[in-house]
Image (cartoon, rainbow, N blue to C red):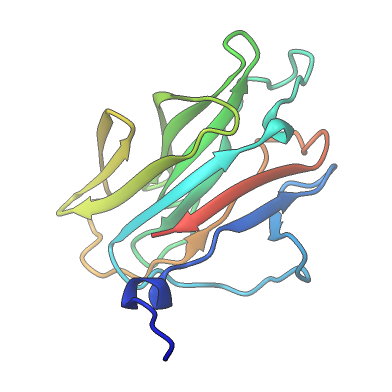
Length: 181
């Protein structure tokens, strides 16, 4: 007789997102590039993420402090540069850690707030959800609340995946390990 718990049946596997050298966008490692959209089926997103040694980079002062994108979703049935929420990240040369940010667009205005830092190869839980007219970000012991757009009474949310830049492209292949919970 074969027994398996219900949790194991519904557990999502860890996915390796690869941002190739000279690119901005990521793809799931080992799969063909995809331009398909994926919608978020709820108003919350919880996942674990881990950065390996490939997350270390030095842009020689050129945009080193720009915030890369980790994971999140669009909001208000609009494009993500109009309304969205996601976690951001940047490699900090001084601390040799990855800084983690709350990264939002509300009515076209970008807001970036530092939440904390993670060590290379450290796995953490990230939570992003909506409560009324707010986005709530949770990372380690940090909790940040950011206002959503004022006309967001209807939601179609498409997923936003790992992305390198600003205006700089990935200086080498970068792998990010994400497991949706």
